[in-house]
Image (cartoon, rainbow, N blue to C red; front, side, top):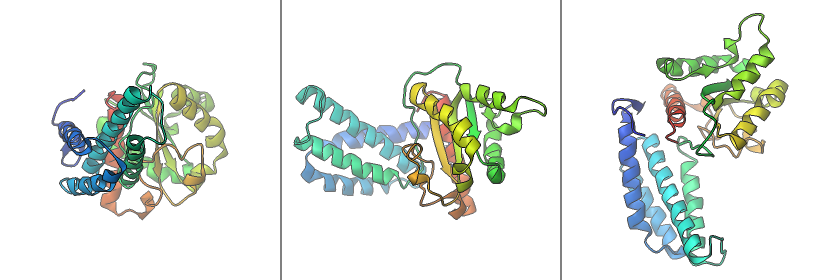
Length: 273
């Protein structure tokens, strides 16, 4: 669903721009892949990197790569269905080439801002909230997240534990908020990973909602930590690479990261991811 063209996804990029980028990526994929074999993979990657040079922002490059990857995956699925009764065949040259190409595409995407997708296309309509899970030692970053969602306060319901009123049954309020969470933003730091409350009360229901009910997990790496060692979390692609945490970014890079966070959240809530 493409909305009003003046809605911005990042400075200088609109949702209409994203539609154009995805269309360009689809055309490029169809023209470049042809009959794919393993000898063509390095040439494809070289041509792809040259094509990415046409885009100025990392977000635009990420969108182009994301769509290219979708086209490669779709082509591989079609090949398996037509040639191998829908099953993988490890010695098939086309399959080896496709998997190799996907490997390189994942590496390229790992250096760029996240383009998020829901694991399931359908989910309970009651899931509408954006839940922020964080350590209270990272409260300054929570304030930044709140600031970036504020312009969309009439469209997006952002929930964090500052919403809990004095005297309320706070554990029950958190449980109820999680039950209606569509997007969970995790502010990852050593303090987050070491929090017993987060590990026992917040993460289990959020991860279950992601696995079974179409919720989406968006980790944001605040500081150097052992995120990559946390096997229950590290298969969710972070908004920024663990090698470049928020603490290592200059002010402009931080703003771009937060803008992409809001952009991806809006896409998911609008059913565009």
